[in-house]
Length: 500
Ligand code: NAD
Image (cartoon, rainbow, N blue to C red; front, side, top):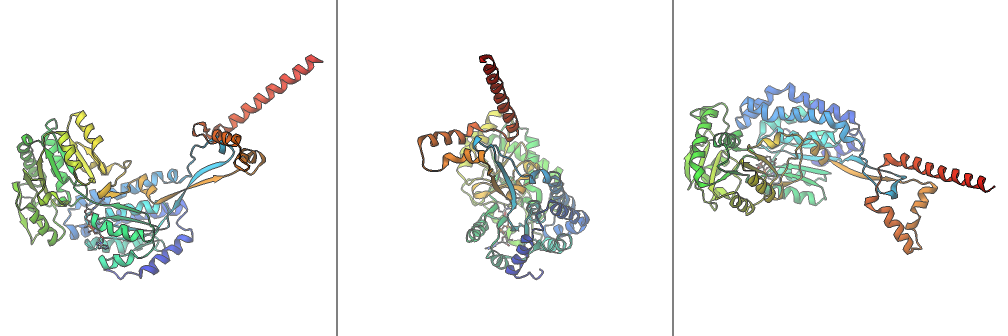
């Protein structure tokens, strides 16, 4: 681990850079985003090696799920940044017909982004894209639990990005505790719900706003109308990507008991297709982060009926893709987020039973519904909370740039990706630019004392939300007014001439 700067000095340096205004021009932001894109494109080998060292991730999975995701996100932001950063023109009432009313987008200032170890590059740099796009200075804190990726981020950020505005701070709990004493203008945290509460408490001391991307148990609902083979393949893939260490991995399956055997058979077939006869020797199957987590996961398997897998190799940090059947909802595996390649199956009667089950637990980060019964899909969607949903697949809602990504309740607060990332790191400053002329003052008059009932009636009309008029129609209105005035003047002159 590199030697960090003193946190107070670090934040003060970045604050000076922010106050200099250098991060605000759109050209600067675009240049930094392009530099970040180059960082990813020019270092693919080093990145995939670091991810293999940290998590035994295979090269293609690293490129697909981390590097390419980031590149696509940068490209998407670059396509839209000019349009997003323009001041917004909201509708107004007649009271402001002569004024300018607009919303300026203001960066928060110096923001802290804390990443997690399971997708250590993606989850650290993806929020940074939004923070740069919005014009902030950033302290980037990668997870100490993925040290090779943390080192890579530290080394490459200083090489590619403007060091005045973007700095990496490495370390574990003691270093993070020190860093969190500083006053940031925004904190974006990805990690567990337990630590999320510590981050929120530290932020509250400075009234710093936060986004918390947390975890939880993401349920899957499956019924007999779904294609079981395709569903099993998609569910087991979602469970086994990164050896189950994915925040939106399907955590457990709810299905009628009559489907259980068919589903398990389909999963076995799918696992053979994905990882061959022995997943341990497949180059595409990952490993668990450390021995503590292997121990935790092997304890969770204990006491359950194993329908498939169950093999644990502590030395290799390997846990086989494992399916547990007839699981008791009160068993330990149903009390915490699994974060490993183990899928417990719980029997339920129908969609209504599933809704009751999901609602009796903390709000999940993701929810997956496998069904072709439109009414049941609708009922589940409308009656259960979740950060995000994919119907008839797992994980994939994450890949849609135009969808907000984030949790709700215990699984987090706030959201990001695409425009939502830009908005997250942007303060929307409302501006009313009043007219100082005589007509403007006449319109404003009724608000001054002495008050009368007439003032109240007049103001009620002026401020009525239904009586709004888009600014672009102001000239039309003036022309109409002039036309009416002209008409009456002509009529007046005509009648005067006739009288004479
Ligand atoms: P974690 O919360 O244990 O640790 C995250 C970081 O917080 C650590 O790297 C450490 O630097 C810091 N930290 C830990 N304890 C601290 C303390 N007491 N005081 C100050 N700082 C402390 O999370 P993790 O193990 O890295 O990640 C796993 C969890 O993250 C899972 O629950 C997973 O679901 C969740 N997650 C969520 C998302 C999402 O997008 N919502 C993505 C990935 C992971």
